[in-house]
Structures are given as C-alpha cells and as structure tokens.
Amino acid sequence: MTDIDIGSRWGYTKRGYAITQSVRQLRHRSTATLITLLVLGTTFALPAVFWFGSASISQLVNRSVGEESITVYLNLDVTDLEAARLAEQWQGEARIRATTHISRAEALALFQEQTDLDDALAALGANPLPSAVVVYPAIDPNLPGNELVTRVEGLAAALQAQPVVDRVQIDLDWVRKLQSALNLFRVVVSLLAGFLTLTGLLVIGNTIRLELLRRQREREVSTLLGASRSFLNRPIIYTGALYGLLGGAVAAVLATVAYSFIKAPADELAMLYASTFRLSLPTAGQFLTIIAVVTALGLLGAILSLFRPIQGQVPNR
Amino acid sequence: MISFEHVSLAYQTGRFALEDVSFQLKPASFTFLTGHSGAGKSSLLRLIARLEKPTSGEIRVGDIAYSQLKPRQEPGLRRQMGIVFQDNQLLYDRSVFDNVALPLIIGGFRFSEIKTRAMAALERVGLADRYADDPINLSGGEQQRVGIARAVVAKPRILLADEPTGNLDADISEEIMRLLLQFNNSGVSVLFATHDRELLQNYRFPQLVLDGGRITNLGRSPAPARQTAHESVSP
Image 1 (cartoon, rainbow over the protein chains, first blue to last red):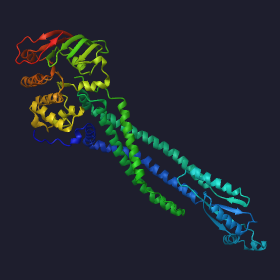
Image 2 (cartoon, chains in turn green, blue; image 1 turned 90 degrees about the vertical axis):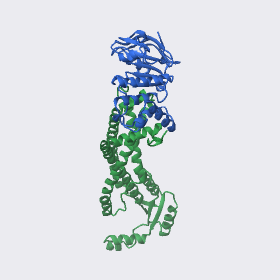
Image 3 (cartoon, rainbow over the protein chains, first blue to last red; image 1 turned 90 degrees about the horizontal axis):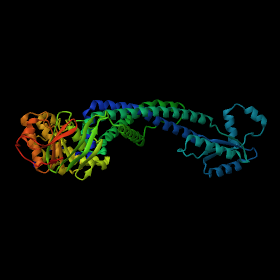
Image 4 (tube, rainbow over the protein chains, first blue to last red; image 1 turned 180 degrees about the horizontal axis):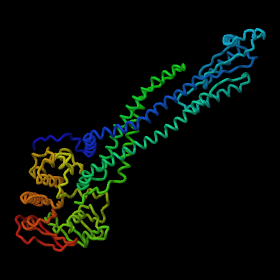
C-alpha cells in the first residue's frame, strides 16, 4: 500500500482521538470559543483579584503585629543594672525576639526631649521615672492574625505577672479593628467569589450542554459503532477541562493585570503612612492555583452536564 | 446465528412495532427483510443491534442471549456488527479515512492496523484514492460505499443494512448490492432491509416479510436470482 498522509498517529488512539476532537471543536468555532473563554476569564478574574488582595492584607496584619512592641515599666526600686540583666534574661526566651533596655537616665532624657516639663522635674529633685524594657515578640508570620494577637497578649500578661514589673503597655486595639475589618472583607469576598464561581460553573455547564447537542450526531454514530460510555464521554470531559484550563489562564492574566493597576496606588498609600508594606504581585504558585481551580471547575461542569444526557442519542433510522 | 423467539416490541402507547416474531438465520447467510414502510423492519434491526430492548421474547446472536446481556456488554456486542443506513450516517467534519477508521479507534486497534484495515476497506469499495476527501464532496453512491466500508472495516460477523439503496438510483443500488454480496461471500451474515421490488426480484435470497409488526412469510424471492450467496432462514 502506498504511504498515506492522515495526520498524527496519536490522534488514532482512544485518548488522542478524544483530545483531538475536543481541540478541533474549539478551533472550529473559534469566535464562540473566544467569547466563552473571555466570559470565564472575567468571571473568575474578580475572585482571583480578591484572593491575591486578601493574602497581601493578611501579610499586612501579621507584619503589623510582628513590628508591635511591648513596653515593660519596672518597679522604681529596680536598679539599671538589674533591669539590664532582666532584659538580657528575657531575650533568651523563645517567645521574645529582642529586648531593649531603657535606663532611668535615658527615660528621663527622652521625657525631657518630648515635653516642656523641665521645671516640674527640677522641683521633684530626683528622677521619678523607672527603668523600662522594650520587648519585641517572636512572631511566626504564617500564623493567623487572631492567633498572633492572642499570643502577643499572652506574652504581655506573663510579663505583667512578674513581681519586678510595675506596668506593661501595648496597643493592639487597632490590630483587632483591622482584623475585624479583614474578616468582614473575607466573608463578603467569599460570598461574592462563591456566586461568581457558581456563575462560571453554570457557564461551563451550559457550554458543555450545547457541545453535547452539537456532537449529538457523532455520539449517535459512535454508539452504533460500539463505542462505550467512556469513549462517548471522554471528548466532552476533555472539552470541559480545556475550557477550564484556558478560561483559568485568561482569568489569571486578567487578575494579574488588574492587580498591577491596584499595586501602585496601594504602595503609595502605604508610603504615606510610613509603612514598609508593599502589595506583592501574584506568585507563580498563585497563578497556577487559579488555573488549576478553574480547570477542576471545568471538569466538574462537564461531568455534571453528562449526568443528564441529551435525549435521543441513537437515531431512529 | 441470529434467532428471535416470540419477540414483541411495544410502544408506550401499547401499539406493537413487532409482535410475536420468531425466526432463525444461519451463520454467513444473506437474508432480505422486507415489508411496507412502518412494517417493523427498522425496529427489528434496532433490536438486533440492541438499540431497543424487546418487550417480551428472547433474541440470541451466536451464544449471546440478550436477556442475559449487561448494559456494559452492549458496546462489545455492537462491535461484532456492522450497520449501514439509508442516510449513511457519515460524519462530515472529518475525512473519508477518518470516518472509516472510527470503528477501529473505538475498538482500540493499533495505528498500523487502523491504517492497513481502513485503506483495505476503502480499496474494496473502490474509494482508496478518495481517502483524504471530505465525504460531502462525494456522490450519494460513493457516500454509501464509505458507509459500507465503515461497517465492515472491523470485520463484523453480522452486517445489518437498513434500506442502504433507498436514496440511490438503480445502477448504484446494483453496485451496493454487489458489494454486500462480496462481504457475504467472505463469511459475513447480511440482513438487508429493503422494499425495493427490483432488488428482491433480481436476487433470489431468503426473505423475512413483515406486515404490521408480524412475520407473514419466510421464504424465497419468487423471481430467479442473478447471483447466489450463502443463504438460510428457518421459521
């Protein structure tokens, strides 16, 4: 037999045939495919932007807690030498990252620098200020914000319980407020993401139903030729996965572009507040996660569509 | 090879498409299935291909009793059969070769086997040189020949032909008939549904005559045959 040109060997295996048919159908209706992919991309881009943003804001809270310090005022009868030893001793503890000792003289100098109460201090005759130790907690930035706050507060309470300590000062209220606002943001975003994900799933499901109708003749003929259910369903499932894969890629690209537009003004705002916080662009892992999730949704949409097959799969004549 | 024992097929309305049909076809036989439109010819073929399930009775193909057949075994049963339709049921989004190769892909054949068998089948129907064409560019008779090549490419034991010459002129019908006879001579059982009087008169093969869903006659065509083949039918 003369050699014939019939295309790739792989396209004549069962799986190769299914993938070839899926790709061919998508390419055959390129305009419709492009529109569907854009619909999927824009639908999933918004939850993706929220997800990227939520991760950055969590980092902001954790960094804020991590940068927060506890000021421990010691009793007046504690000498500077004892205070310095205490600071050194605390620094060895696992929960404490660093300590800074402020002697009574340094405290007085700071007080004088920041206030105009020199005359009042002169009238007192002696230095009324105690030694202080500034404690910087050791923070695992991967812990949830709530737990970080609880841990810092636990450390403050433990320091307060020591007999040499007069008073502990810490301000975590603003972190709690930020945490509450973030939790509300997360709930709203989760709901919105849920609705948009459901929309995406319906779009994929509807597209697959139309695909089933378009491929009805092929499915009928294949059934007559002895195709198994898996042979019939495989191209449909691959089509769902392809829509998910490509739609996910479009969503990830759109989300990254949108995020890069948000980044500049957000960084500028952070700088105005003298914060070192910067919005970080999505990582490759986040990018791939978006694609993987949307691909999984494409598969799910296709499988759900196949649960209720289109009527009349086999011709009457 | 194929046997029906008191087989009935009723619609949901209660009307019978087939009623108490019994017959046996021996292996490698050529049998005409005839009767007016709506007599039940297509229903009978659909029952053999397991596209419908009988309301009552037993169908056997070889040693397979349909009543014992599990749904997952049905595709395997269909792969033992070739089916040719009046409207040929070709897929117009792919080449002639890809249409003929489809049963082999479904059957999980290797690429080299697919290439060899599909080209051999096209050779037998005289269309090897048209393998790369789109079916839409072929004439009606050529398209039907592609349909026949596809039906026989996986070397089925049974060929079910549902009015394959219904849309074709007399010369092309003769050509299709000759092809089916060739396959029958190579050992394939052929059950040929038709109401083409000319064909029935020209070829003296056993006939199953259906009328109103019942078999009214099991016998031979009254006219002398032009060409003989394997034949056998018994009540």
